[in-house]
Length: 508
Image (cartoon, rainbow, N blue to C red; front, side):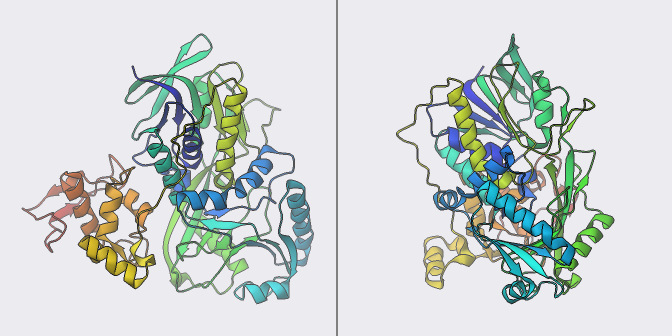
Protein backbone atom coordinates (compact mmCIF):
# COMPACT_ATOMS: atom_id res chain seq x y z
CA UNK A 1 0.00 0.00 0.00
CA UNK A 2 1.40 3.39 -1.05
CA UNK A 3 2.22 5.71 1.86
CA UNK A 4 2.14 9.53 1.96
CA UNK A 5 2.65 12.10 4.66
CA UNK A 6 -0.38 14.14 3.55
CA UNK A 7 -3.39 13.34 1.38
CA UNK A 8 -5.44 16.32 0.17
CA UNK A 9 -9.04 15.60 -0.84
CA UNK A 10 -10.28 17.94 -3.57
CA UNK A 11 -8.41 19.75 -6.35
CA UNK A 12 -10.36 23.00 -6.39
CA UNK A 13 -8.68 26.31 -5.72
CA UNK A 14 -8.30 25.62 -2.00
CA UNK A 15 -6.92 22.10 -2.42
CA UNK A 16 -4.50 23.16 -5.15
CA UNK A 17 -3.24 26.16 -3.16
CA UNK A 18 -2.70 23.89 -0.15
CA UNK A 19 -0.85 21.39 -2.36
CA UNK A 20 1.43 24.15 -3.62
CA UNK A 21 2.08 25.48 -0.10
CA UNK A 22 2.96 22.01 1.19
CA UNK A 23 5.17 21.26 -1.82
CA UNK A 24 7.63 23.72 -0.30
CA UNK A 25 8.44 21.24 2.45
CA UNK A 26 10.06 17.84 2.67
CA UNK A 27 6.77 15.96 2.64
CA UNK A 28 5.25 13.33 0.39
CA UNK A 29 1.92 14.83 -0.67
CA UNK A 30 -0.92 13.30 -2.68
CA UNK A 31 -3.76 15.39 -4.16
CA UNK A 32 -6.86 13.42 -5.17
CA UNK A 33 -9.83 14.64 -7.22
CA UNK A 34 -12.95 12.73 -8.23
CA UNK A 35 -13.37 14.59 -11.53
CA UNK A 36 -11.29 14.22 -14.70
CA UNK A 37 -9.54 17.56 -14.21
CA UNK A 38 -8.50 19.99 -11.51
CA UNK A 39 -10.81 22.92 -10.78
CA UNK A 40 -13.87 21.22 -12.27
CA UNK A 41 -16.28 22.09 -9.44
CA UNK A 42 -16.98 25.45 -7.81
CA UNK A 43 -13.66 26.80 -9.06
CA UNK A 44 -14.80 26.43 -12.68
CA UNK A 45 -18.04 28.42 -12.31
CA UNK A 46 -17.82 31.60 -10.28
CA UNK A 47 -17.60 35.36 -10.67
CA UNK A 48 -13.78 35.46 -10.92
CA UNK A 49 -13.45 38.36 -8.47
CA UNK A 50 -10.69 38.88 -5.92
CA UNK A 51 -12.68 40.65 -3.21
CA UNK A 52 -11.35 43.61 -1.26
CA UNK A 53 -12.71 42.40 2.11
CA UNK A 54 -15.39 44.89 3.20
CA UNK A 55 -18.20 42.30 3.13
CA UNK A 56 -17.27 39.78 5.88
CA UNK A 57 -18.21 40.52 9.45
CA UNK A 58 -15.25 41.98 11.40
CA UNK A 59 -13.64 39.50 13.75
CA UNK A 60 -14.47 36.43 11.65
CA UNK A 61 -11.96 34.07 10.12
CA UNK A 62 -13.55 34.84 6.77
CA UNK A 63 -12.70 38.55 7.14
CA UNK A 64 -9.11 37.89 8.21
CA UNK A 65 -8.41 35.39 5.43
CA UNK A 66 -10.16 37.53 2.78
CA UNK A 67 -7.92 40.53 3.46
CA UNK A 68 -4.77 38.44 3.91
CA UNK A 69 -5.49 36.50 0.72
CA UNK A 70 -6.20 39.65 -1.29
CA UNK A 71 -2.72 40.98 -0.46
CA UNK A 72 -1.12 37.78 -1.79
CA UNK A 73 -2.58 37.85 -5.30
CA UNK A 74 -0.05 40.16 -6.98
CA UNK A 75 2.86 37.93 -5.96
CA UNK A 76 0.83 34.79 -6.67
CA UNK A 77 -0.05 35.89 -10.21
CA UNK A 78 3.54 36.96 -10.91
CA UNK A 79 5.02 33.66 -9.70
CA UNK A 80 2.42 31.44 -11.38
CA UNK A 81 1.90 33.47 -14.56
CA UNK A 82 -1.88 33.78 -14.76
CA UNK A 83 -4.13 36.75 -15.50
CA UNK A 84 -4.96 39.05 -12.56
CA UNK A 85 -5.83 42.74 -12.71
CA UNK A 86 -6.69 45.12 -9.88
CA UNK A 87 -9.60 46.84 -11.62
CA UNK A 88 -11.43 47.85 -8.43
CA UNK A 89 -15.15 47.55 -7.72
CA UNK A 90 -18.13 49.78 -6.98
CA UNK A 91 -21.05 49.00 -4.67
CA UNK A 92 -23.83 51.03 -6.26
CA UNK A 93 -26.70 52.63 -4.33
CA UNK A 94 -29.55 53.22 -6.76
CA UNK A 95 -31.98 54.50 -4.12
CA UNK A 96 -31.17 57.08 -1.40
CA UNK A 97 -32.23 54.67 1.35
CA UNK A 98 -29.38 52.35 0.32
CA UNK A 99 -26.65 54.92 1.01
CA UNK A 100 -26.36 54.25 4.78
CA UNK A 101 -25.52 50.60 3.96
CA UNK A 102 -22.58 51.82 1.88
CA UNK A 103 -21.18 53.65 4.88
CA UNK A 104 -21.66 50.52 7.00
CA UNK A 105 -19.68 48.50 4.43
CA UNK A 106 -16.94 51.15 4.44
CA UNK A 107 -16.68 50.98 8.22
CA UNK A 108 -16.60 47.17 8.09
CA UNK A 109 -13.82 47.32 5.53
CA UNK A 110 -11.78 49.69 7.68
CA UNK A 111 -12.26 47.39 10.68
CA UNK A 112 -11.07 44.45 8.54
CA UNK A 113 -7.94 46.31 7.44
CA UNK A 114 -9.04 47.09 3.87
CA UNK A 115 -7.31 50.09 2.29
CA UNK A 116 -8.36 52.18 -0.71
CA UNK A 117 -12.03 52.61 0.22
CA UNK A 118 -13.85 55.79 -0.76
CA UNK A 119 -17.42 57.07 -1.00
CA UNK A 120 -18.33 58.54 -4.40
CA UNK A 121 -21.21 60.65 -5.60
CA UNK A 122 -23.51 59.41 -8.32
CA UNK A 123 -22.01 62.00 -10.66
CA UNK A 124 -18.46 60.77 -10.07
CA UNK A 125 -19.55 57.16 -10.50
CA UNK A 126 -21.19 57.92 -13.86
CA UNK A 127 -18.07 59.79 -14.98
CA UNK A 128 -16.00 56.66 -14.28
CA UNK A 129 -18.53 54.09 -15.55
CA UNK A 130 -20.92 55.81 -18.01
CA UNK A 131 -23.10 52.70 -18.43
CA UNK A 132 -24.24 52.68 -14.80
CA UNK A 133 -27.88 53.41 -13.94
CA UNK A 134 -28.50 57.19 -14.25
CA UNK A 135 -30.50 56.99 -11.02
CA UNK A 136 -27.44 55.86 -9.04
CA UNK A 137 -26.93 58.34 -6.22
CA UNK A 138 -23.73 57.05 -4.55
CA UNK A 139 -21.18 54.25 -4.56
CA UNK A 140 -18.51 52.69 -2.40
CA UNK A 141 -15.23 52.36 -4.35
CA UNK A 142 -12.76 49.63 -3.39
CA UNK A 143 -9.49 50.01 -5.26
CA UNK A 144 -7.93 46.73 -4.07
CA UNK A 145 -10.59 44.51 -5.65
CA UNK A 146 -9.52 42.60 -8.75
CA UNK A 147 -10.53 40.20 -11.48
CA UNK A 148 -8.73 37.03 -12.50
CA UNK A 149 -8.97 33.83 -14.49
CA UNK A 150 -9.99 31.51 -11.63
CA UNK A 151 -9.35 28.27 -13.47
CA UNK A 152 -5.93 29.49 -14.61
CA UNK A 153 -5.10 30.20 -10.96
CA UNK A 154 -6.15 26.68 -9.97
CA UNK A 155 -4.24 25.04 -12.80
CA UNK A 156 -1.13 27.14 -12.19
CA UNK A 157 -1.04 26.25 -8.50
CA UNK A 158 -1.60 22.57 -9.29
CA UNK A 159 1.11 22.50 -11.96
CA UNK A 160 3.56 24.24 -9.64
CA UNK A 161 2.75 21.72 -6.91
CA UNK A 162 3.24 18.78 -9.29
CA UNK A 163 6.56 20.07 -10.61
CA UNK A 164 7.66 20.45 -6.98
CA UNK A 165 6.90 16.80 -6.20
CA UNK A 166 3.19 16.54 -5.35
CA UNK A 167 1.42 13.49 -6.81
CA UNK A 168 -1.94 14.18 -8.48
CA UNK A 169 -4.55 11.46 -9.00
CA UNK A 170 -7.62 12.47 -11.04
CA UNK A 171 -10.81 10.40 -11.34
CA UNK A 172 -10.10 9.25 -7.80
CA UNK A 173 -13.04 9.56 -5.42
CA UNK A 174 -12.61 9.53 -1.64
CA UNK A 175 -14.64 6.70 -0.07
CA UNK A 176 -13.60 6.54 3.57
CA UNK A 177 -10.87 6.44 6.19
CA UNK A 178 -8.67 3.74 7.60
CA UNK A 179 -8.63 4.34 11.36
CA UNK A 180 -6.38 3.05 14.11
CA UNK A 181 -8.39 3.95 17.17
CA UNK A 182 -9.00 7.69 16.85
CA UNK A 183 -6.04 8.20 14.54
CA UNK A 184 -6.33 8.41 10.77
CA UNK A 185 -4.01 5.82 9.23
CA UNK A 186 -5.08 6.14 5.59
CA UNK A 187 -7.87 6.67 3.09
CA UNK A 188 -9.96 4.44 0.87
CA UNK A 189 -10.51 5.67 -2.68
CA UNK A 190 -12.17 4.44 -5.85
CA UNK A 191 -8.67 3.43 -7.00
CA UNK A 192 -7.58 1.62 -3.88
CA UNK A 193 -6.33 2.34 -0.37
CA UNK A 194 -3.46 4.61 0.68
CA UNK A 195 -1.66 5.11 3.97
CA UNK A 196 -1.01 8.59 5.35
CA UNK A 197 -0.47 10.56 8.54
CA UNK A 198 -2.55 13.63 7.66
CA UNK A 199 -5.65 14.25 5.55
CA UNK A 200 -6.61 17.75 4.41
CA UNK A 201 -10.34 17.89 3.75
CA UNK A 202 -10.74 20.41 0.89
CA UNK A 203 -13.72 18.61 -0.62
CA UNK A 204 -15.86 21.70 -1.14
CA UNK A 205 -19.53 20.78 -1.31
CA UNK A 206 -18.67 17.35 0.09
CA UNK A 207 -16.49 18.53 2.99
CA UNK A 208 -19.26 17.72 5.46
CA UNK A 209 -19.50 14.12 4.22
CA UNK A 210 -15.73 13.67 4.54
CA UNK A 211 -15.65 14.87 8.14
CA UNK A 212 -18.65 12.71 9.02
CA UNK A 213 -16.78 9.61 7.86
CA UNK A 214 -14.14 10.43 10.46
CA UNK A 215 -16.84 10.83 13.13
CA UNK A 216 -16.26 14.60 13.29
CA UNK A 217 -18.97 17.29 13.55
CA UNK A 218 -21.82 14.83 12.91
CA UNK A 219 -24.39 17.64 13.03
CA UNK A 220 -22.67 19.82 10.45
CA UNK A 221 -24.11 19.92 6.91
CA UNK A 222 -23.29 22.08 3.90
CA UNK A 223 -26.09 23.59 1.87
CA UNK A 224 -25.39 23.83 -1.89
CA UNK A 225 -26.20 27.33 -3.16
CA UNK A 226 -26.66 27.69 -6.90
CA UNK A 227 -25.78 30.84 -8.80
CA UNK A 228 -26.75 31.41 -12.44
CA UNK A 229 -24.89 33.63 -14.90
CA UNK A 230 -25.03 35.11 -18.38
CA UNK A 231 -21.94 35.60 -20.54
CA UNK A 232 -22.02 38.59 -22.91
CA UNK A 233 -20.26 39.35 -26.16
CA UNK A 234 -17.10 41.33 -25.46
CA UNK A 235 -17.93 43.94 -28.12
CA UNK A 236 -21.33 44.83 -26.69
CA UNK A 237 -20.56 46.12 -23.19
CA UNK A 238 -17.44 48.26 -22.72
CA UNK A 239 -17.14 47.87 -18.96
CA UNK A 240 -13.84 48.26 -17.14
CA UNK A 241 -14.52 47.26 -13.54
CA UNK A 242 -17.00 45.48 -11.27
CA UNK A 243 -20.45 46.82 -10.38
CA UNK A 244 -22.11 45.38 -7.26
CA UNK A 245 -25.56 46.20 -5.93
CA UNK A 246 -25.97 46.94 -2.23
CA UNK A 247 -25.70 43.41 -0.71
CA UNK A 248 -28.38 41.46 1.09
CA UNK A 249 -28.05 39.13 4.07
CA UNK A 250 -27.97 36.17 1.63
CA UNK A 251 -25.43 37.25 -0.99
CA UNK A 252 -23.39 40.04 -2.49
CA UNK A 253 -26.15 40.37 -5.08
CA UNK A 254 -26.44 40.20 -8.85
CA UNK A 255 -23.54 42.10 -10.36
CA UNK A 256 -22.21 43.17 -13.73
CA UNK A 257 -18.48 42.69 -14.17
CA UNK A 258 -15.69 42.82 -16.67
CA UNK A 259 -13.46 39.76 -17.01
CA UNK A 260 -9.82 39.28 -17.93
CA UNK A 261 -10.98 37.54 -21.12
CA UNK A 262 -13.04 40.53 -22.23
CA UNK A 263 -16.49 38.93 -22.03
CA UNK A 264 -18.62 40.68 -19.36
CA UNK A 265 -20.68 38.41 -17.12
CA UNK A 266 -23.82 39.14 -15.12
CA UNK A 267 -25.01 37.21 -12.07
CA UNK A 268 -25.23 35.32 -9.84
CA UNK A 269 -28.49 34.86 -8.04
CA UNK A 270 -28.44 32.73 -4.90
CA UNK A 271 -30.78 29.76 -4.49
CA UNK A 272 -30.32 26.92 -2.04
CA UNK A 273 -30.76 23.55 -3.75
CA UNK A 274 -30.88 19.98 -2.53
CA UNK A 275 -28.50 18.34 -4.99
CA UNK A 276 -24.75 18.83 -4.80
CA UNK A 277 -24.47 18.28 -8.55
CA UNK A 278 -27.47 20.40 -9.59
CA UNK A 279 -25.88 22.96 -11.89
CA UNK A 280 -28.98 23.42 -14.02
CA UNK A 281 -29.87 26.90 -15.21
CA UNK A 282 -33.55 27.76 -14.88
CA UNK A 283 -35.82 30.18 -16.71
CA UNK A 284 -36.92 31.78 -13.45
CA UNK A 285 -33.37 32.09 -12.16
CA UNK A 286 -32.05 33.61 -15.37
CA UNK A 287 -34.91 36.12 -15.46
CA UNK A 288 -34.00 37.10 -11.91
CA UNK A 289 -30.38 37.54 -12.94
CA UNK A 290 -31.22 39.72 -15.94
CA UNK A 291 -33.57 41.95 -13.94
CA UNK A 292 -30.95 42.39 -11.25
CA UNK A 293 -28.29 43.27 -13.82
CA UNK A 294 -30.57 45.79 -15.56
CA UNK A 295 -30.96 47.60 -12.26
CA UNK A 296 -27.23 48.39 -12.44
CA UNK A 297 -26.88 48.79 -16.23
CA UNK A 298 -30.28 49.54 -17.83
CA UNK A 299 -28.82 49.54 -21.36
CA UNK A 300 -28.06 45.80 -21.31
CA UNK A 301 -29.16 44.21 -24.57
CA UNK A 302 -30.24 40.53 -24.47
CA UNK A 303 -28.92 40.18 -28.02
CA UNK A 304 -25.42 40.40 -26.54
CA UNK A 305 -25.88 37.12 -24.63
CA UNK A 306 -23.61 34.39 -25.98
CA UNK A 307 -23.74 31.84 -23.16
CA UNK A 308 -24.99 30.95 -19.72
CA UNK A 309 -23.86 28.73 -16.89
CA UNK A 310 -24.56 27.89 -13.27
CA UNK A 311 -22.24 27.10 -10.38
CA UNK A 312 -22.62 25.78 -6.86
CA UNK A 313 -21.15 27.22 -3.67
CA UNK A 314 -20.61 25.41 -0.39
CA UNK A 315 -22.79 27.96 1.36
CA UNK A 316 -21.17 29.58 4.36
CA UNK A 317 -24.42 29.38 6.27
CA UNK A 318 -23.65 25.68 6.57
CA UNK A 319 -26.58 24.58 8.62
CA UNK A 320 -26.35 22.66 11.85
CA UNK A 321 -28.72 19.74 12.24
CA UNK A 322 -28.97 20.28 16.00
CA UNK A 323 -31.80 22.70 16.90
CA UNK A 324 -30.53 25.87 18.53
CA UNK A 325 -26.93 25.47 17.35
CA UNK A 326 -25.66 27.70 14.52
CA UNK A 327 -22.20 27.53 12.94
CA UNK A 328 -22.87 30.90 11.29
CA UNK A 329 -21.41 32.18 8.06
CA UNK A 330 -17.73 31.72 8.89
CA UNK A 331 -15.14 29.48 7.27
CA UNK A 332 -14.14 26.29 9.06
CA UNK A 333 -10.33 26.00 9.02
CA UNK A 334 -9.23 23.67 11.80
CA UNK A 335 -7.49 20.58 12.98
CA UNK A 336 -10.45 18.41 13.87
CA UNK A 337 -11.14 17.61 17.50
CA UNK A 338 -11.66 14.03 18.60
CA UNK A 339 -9.59 12.45 15.85
CA UNK A 340 -5.90 12.78 15.07
CA UNK A 341 -4.69 13.60 11.58
CA UNK A 342 -7.58 15.54 9.97
CA UNK A 343 -7.54 19.17 8.81
CA UNK A 344 -11.01 20.48 7.89
CA UNK A 345 -11.49 23.26 5.34
CA UNK A 346 -15.25 23.63 5.05
CA UNK A 347 -17.94 26.17 4.22
CA UNK A 348 -15.49 27.93 1.92
CA UNK A 349 -17.94 30.01 -0.11
CA UNK A 350 -17.26 33.54 -1.36
CA UNK A 351 -14.66 34.98 -0.81
CA UNK A 352 -13.08 31.51 -0.93
CA UNK A 353 -11.23 32.18 -4.20
CA UNK A 354 -9.69 35.34 -2.73
CA UNK A 355 -8.84 33.68 0.57
CA UNK A 356 -7.46 30.44 -0.89
CA UNK A 357 -3.72 31.32 -0.72
CA UNK A 358 -4.17 32.57 2.86
CA UNK A 359 -6.09 29.40 3.78
CA UNK A 360 -3.16 27.39 2.42
CA UNK A 361 -0.73 29.29 4.64
CA UNK A 362 -3.05 28.74 7.61
CA UNK A 363 -2.90 24.98 6.95
CA UNK A 364 0.90 25.14 7.07
CA UNK A 365 0.67 26.97 10.40
CA UNK A 366 -1.79 24.41 11.81
CA UNK A 367 0.49 21.51 10.87
CA UNK A 368 3.52 23.26 12.33
CA UNK A 369 1.64 24.03 15.56
CA UNK A 370 0.63 20.35 15.72
CA UNK A 371 4.30 19.38 15.79
CA UNK A 372 4.77 18.43 12.15
CA UNK A 373 8.46 18.92 11.26
CA UNK A 374 8.32 21.17 8.19
CA UNK A 375 11.74 21.33 6.58
CA UNK A 376 11.94 23.53 3.50
CA UNK A 377 13.28 21.99 0.29
CA UNK A 378 16.28 23.72 -1.16
CA UNK A 379 15.02 22.74 -4.59
CA UNK A 380 11.55 24.29 -4.18
CA UNK A 381 10.74 26.56 -7.13
CA UNK A 382 7.78 28.97 -6.79
CA UNK A 383 7.85 29.87 -10.50
CA UNK A 384 5.55 28.35 -13.11
CA UNK A 385 5.31 29.66 -16.65
CA UNK A 386 2.14 29.43 -18.74
CA UNK A 387 2.22 28.17 -22.32
CA UNK A 388 2.02 30.92 -25.00
CA UNK A 389 -1.42 32.30 -25.88
CA UNK A 390 -1.24 33.11 -29.58
CA UNK A 391 -3.79 35.91 -29.73
CA UNK A 392 -2.01 37.86 -26.97
CA UNK A 393 1.37 37.90 -28.72
CA UNK A 394 2.81 40.69 -30.86
CA UNK A 395 2.88 39.94 -34.63
CA UNK A 396 6.63 39.33 -34.61
CA UNK A 397 6.24 36.95 -31.63
CA UNK A 398 3.46 35.08 -33.45
CA UNK A 399 5.66 34.73 -36.54
CA UNK A 400 8.55 33.36 -34.48
CA UNK A 401 6.26 30.87 -32.72
CA UNK A 402 4.91 29.64 -36.07
CA UNK A 403 8.46 29.36 -37.41
CA UNK A 404 9.40 27.11 -34.47
CA UNK A 405 6.17 25.09 -34.56
CA UNK A 406 3.88 25.31 -37.62
CA UNK A 407 0.94 24.04 -35.55
CA UNK A 408 0.70 27.55 -34.10
CA UNK A 409 -0.16 28.75 -37.60
CA UNK A 410 -3.40 26.71 -37.69
CA UNK A 411 -6.39 28.50 -36.15
CA UNK A 412 -8.83 25.98 -34.65
CA UNK A 413 -11.15 28.35 -32.74
CA UNK A 414 -11.82 31.43 -34.86
CA UNK A 415 -13.72 33.44 -32.24
CA UNK A 416 -10.92 33.25 -29.66
CA UNK A 417 -7.99 32.78 -32.08
CA UNK A 418 -6.88 29.50 -30.47
CA UNK A 419 -4.35 27.53 -32.49
CA UNK A 420 -3.64 23.84 -32.84
CA UNK A 421 -0.24 24.46 -31.29
CA UNK A 422 -1.85 25.74 -28.09
CA UNK A 423 -4.19 22.76 -27.94
CA UNK A 424 -1.38 20.24 -28.40
CA UNK A 425 0.74 22.02 -25.79
CA UNK A 426 -2.04 21.73 -23.20
CA UNK A 427 -2.64 18.06 -23.98
CA UNK A 428 1.02 17.40 -23.16
CA UNK A 429 1.36 19.85 -20.24
CA UNK A 430 2.44 18.85 -16.70
CA UNK A 431 -1.27 18.27 -15.96
CA UNK A 432 -2.52 17.07 -19.36
CA UNK A 433 -5.83 18.31 -20.76
CA UNK A 434 -7.59 15.07 -21.70
CA UNK A 435 -11.16 16.31 -22.28
CA UNK A 436 -12.85 19.03 -24.30
CA UNK A 437 -13.77 21.00 -21.19
CA UNK A 438 -10.20 20.77 -19.90
CA UNK A 439 -8.99 22.35 -23.14
CA UNK A 440 -11.77 24.92 -23.05
CA UNK A 441 -10.79 26.09 -19.58
CA UNK A 442 -7.09 26.24 -20.47
CA UNK A 443 -7.24 27.91 -23.88
CA UNK A 444 -10.70 29.55 -23.90
CA UNK A 445 -11.64 27.78 -27.14
CA UNK A 446 -15.38 27.43 -27.69
CA UNK A 447 -16.23 30.43 -25.51
CA UNK A 448 -16.80 33.02 -28.24
CA UNK A 449 -19.84 33.96 -30.28
CA UNK A 450 -20.16 30.54 -31.99
CA UNK A 451 -19.84 28.68 -28.65
CA UNK A 452 -17.79 25.89 -30.16
CA UNK A 453 -19.88 25.42 -33.29
CA UNK A 454 -16.82 25.69 -35.51
CA UNK A 455 -14.07 24.18 -33.40
CA UNK A 456 -15.62 21.12 -31.75
CA UNK A 457 -15.08 18.51 -34.52
CA UNK A 458 -11.48 19.64 -35.02
CA UNK A 459 -10.75 19.60 -31.29
CA UNK A 460 -12.15 16.07 -30.96
CA UNK A 461 -9.90 14.94 -33.80
CA UNK A 462 -6.83 16.52 -32.21
CA UNK A 463 -7.60 14.98 -28.82
CA UNK A 464 -8.05 11.52 -30.37
CA UNK A 465 -4.82 11.85 -32.32
CA UNK A 466 -2.68 13.15 -29.46
CA UNK A 467 -4.08 10.77 -26.82
CA UNK A 468 -3.90 7.78 -29.14
CA UNK A 469 -7.56 6.87 -28.64
CA UNK A 470 -10.62 6.39 -30.81
CA UNK A 471 -12.73 9.51 -31.39
CA UNK A 472 -15.67 7.75 -29.74
CA UNK A 473 -13.62 7.70 -26.52
CA UNK A 474 -13.16 11.48 -26.43
CA UNK A 475 -15.27 13.06 -23.69
CA UNK A 476 -16.56 16.46 -22.74
CA UNK A 477 -15.64 16.19 -19.06
CA UNK A 478 -14.75 12.58 -18.31
CA UNK A 479 -16.32 9.10 -18.48
CA UNK A 480 -20.02 9.22 -19.30
CA UNK A 481 -19.83 12.41 -21.36
CA UNK A 482 -18.66 10.99 -24.68
CA UNK A 483 -19.50 13.14 -27.69
CA UNK A 484 -19.83 10.36 -30.24
CA UNK A 485 -21.66 7.05 -30.17
CA UNK A 486 -20.25 5.05 -33.10
CA UNK A 487 -18.49 5.45 -36.45
CA UNK A 488 -20.66 5.63 -39.57
CA UNK A 489 -17.85 5.16 -42.11
CA UNK A 490 -14.08 5.00 -42.41
CA UNK A 491 -12.81 8.45 -41.59
CA UNK A 492 -9.50 10.26 -41.39
CA UNK A 493 -9.36 11.55 -37.80
CA UNK A 494 -5.87 12.97 -38.10
CA UNK A 495 -7.22 16.41 -37.35
CA UNK A 496 -6.06 17.84 -40.70
CA UNK A 497 -8.56 16.54 -43.25
CA UNK A 498 -12.03 17.96 -44.07
CA UNK A 499 -13.76 14.58 -43.70
CA UNK A 500 -13.60 14.27 -39.89
CA UNK A 501 -17.35 14.76 -39.39
CA UNK A 502 -18.17 11.13 -40.15
CA UNK A 503 -19.24 10.17 -36.63
CA UNK A 504 -22.75 10.42 -35.35
CA UNK A 505 -23.29 12.74 -32.42
CA UNK A 506 -24.30 10.87 -29.28
CA UNK A 507 -24.42 12.15 -25.69
CA UNK A 508 -22.26 14.63 -23.83
